[in-house]
Image (cartoon, rainbow, N blue to C red; front, side):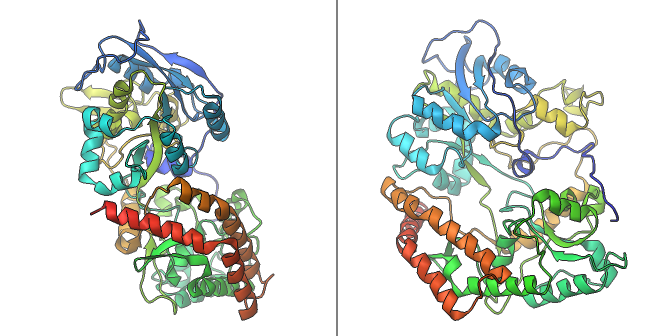
Length: 549
């Protein structure tokens, strides 16, 4: 792994679940129409409950969505062909992803709402806004529409009632549809921490650490025994950018699943004020003080971290896939194991934080939509296996083509006008780096000799052995009442800011982690209002449990 350079994603079609975490995009704002000819503006069009077209006469709707930065939406074959298939044409407004939140908020402030909101994600259309806009009648309750016009969504909610729990607001209504993630990475809360497998081999380390003591010992060896073999003491045993990616995985060794609100033995607590968290801070300060944690951890950018990885200076590092940092090929990166769950004197149970695999805020219908039933049928298709395949890979003749349509045999096209298939895929479908409404919990049929790569097998095995076997969801997806949201809004930012700043001070030694300073730290958290904050989330958690009965 000497002087590594960037790799090319040649030949591999990455899942859109990966892209949500690893990709973003900026695109010029557009306002245009994908047409199938002869639009009608009539509301309450008669909707066919099965098959295509969805409506017999073409209708038009308006949509706002975050631009993916790869192509204009009216030019994307996945959308233009689907317009012909459904008889539903959209006028798209797609501000760049970086500006989408501002444009979204201005849209609601102006009162000039689109018919459909596509892929805003819960960072923009937050659970609080769902409840607020729903109570004002700006968003249409989807419950009855799902039951009557959403057979694929209904099937998912019946098979996985926890999804219904997670998307039902405090008034009993569903205002947005989710993205449902499947596959090897669907349970990851973020990119894992990877260990340099070549360094492990060079030092004869056969297994990943099972305890924090074993982790410490391995990092000491990384620092002192020249595992990259260049004769220089330039190894950085552990790095991150502001601890944001490494923190959740290391916290689990101290019995903590979330850097904030979490469920613990049936009760809700604020983890950053527990003795377990103090133990984490003490351990991380020890690593920092002894040069085992990158001195630039709180100051560097991601580009600096990657440069260190490409020059074979990193022993442990977080990223979605290890080769994103190291510059290796997929095949070479199989040597790098994922850090597994560890125990410590604070926690004898090996646990790992786990994602629900559910992303809220993927699709909503506004009160301005004259044909909400047609909109529901339009989006419901993407919750089927066929619809997932269509949204992810596009229609025939673009990314892929038929070899034998009757026999269902397909092959990838070789004459693509793009650097690689993934770049081309981003040009033909909106399912690229945004929270699209789709159920990806299907094993898609392979195209040609696509099959499952060795790297994908490696990911699944690592996930099963480390995340899925020991994983626990820290806290479920809940909705707060307006009154509860007011309490949270009054303290959450102050809590997060204070805890984040204190973490950096304690780890770097700027603030000594003695009893006096710890007690002052906890006291400050209490003064900010953590008791009411925890009480709100305890009430929401209790409601969530009751909804499962």
